[in-house]
Length: 107
Image (cartoon, rainbow, N blue to C red; front, top):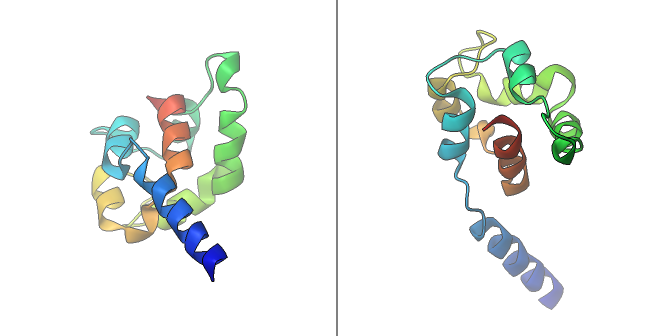
């Protein structure tokens, strides 16, 4: 039982340490625009070698052509993610590591 309690405390402390909120990251990524998978792919293109391994992480999590991201975040299913879609979908929440990685790539 103590193992589970320590794991729960560890998980909640990691989640509490995230400095980037869901809304802040998406405002940076999307802004006032609507992004389809091509635009999102262009926004997350690594510009320097230090970001070279960050894009494969996002693609590994979200799938080829960001299928999981669009399935979770595109609330009106028009193939384009905007802030209204992101805020309307509760399934669009992502981990702190994901938010930090996307912020590094797209902002």
